[in-house]
Length: 299
Length: 120
Image (cartoon, rainbow over all chains, first blue to last red; front, top):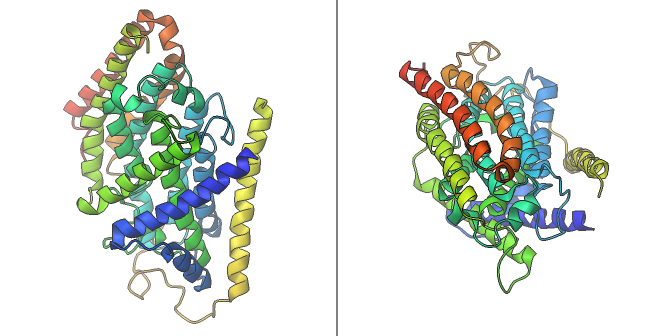
């Protein structure tokens, strides 16, 4: 029962994020646009490139969708409303998100086209930049909660949300999350106006629809992970828990989507340099600070 | 819910996703088929076939970062169990991991000074 509810909420969330993305990119808030573009994609021709690596080409989008869904599976919508409340939830989220890289490289390699290939390899560089900034802030969150279970992590924020307790970690995690979901300005694998669509260049019709759907699922997964780790999950007054999670998730997603078009695209070399020189230093400082606070203050 | 049930659910979710994608493809197929026409299957390279093959070796210009990444990624494997028992162990845990992280951070600084942290 709870699985069906969470999956339904995920579908609604994906649609809402698609509406928000249309708003952020085109400046028009249209409630029907995602549905019409999905229908248009379904009706479009499905072209297979000339000499593809068929296995990689076909499984890239599917693997991306699986990675997104598995990471959503450990995010609580409300107490009890979670697909699997794993004891190692936060670690499982990391493991699932690692497959985003694998899927995108497969999608880039598969069609045997230059733009897709460059997009895929660029994402490998992007991965090296964001990966540590996903795992290190989560460590600090787990230190406070004394658990890797996402439900426990939310409960540990009852007195004070982690966004106040560890603001450095929050900022690093959000920036890294934008890297995972290749949102602008860190959209190196697709790079609109630069790579002719990058990894999306050779995908048409229903395959492109699956690829785009997978990306929406990943955006929802990362926004809800941010809410779970830093913004107190379902905690909040007046409204029921699931409404708080949904509202906060949509707010985070809207923030991430709205930020992108206002900034110039980050080059891979620049992103790597900033992540490793500034980001890792700050992430280690964050772990140390949280460590000291967690020993001194009992909350 | 037992651990085994939870992982069974995750496996079911994976298989269900594959089923969803297959049904999307079947729906698209039911709407219509693509017509086979010459030159339609050329990859997106301005309508002509690329001169050079695509599946060749590329220079990973970020390899300096990639090597450091391996060291840091290994470290994270130790960090997660440490983070869970951190408050129980108290100051000892802070010192233990502090020394470990300090050594690793010195490694990062050394790599930085030797020019590993730039596009080669």
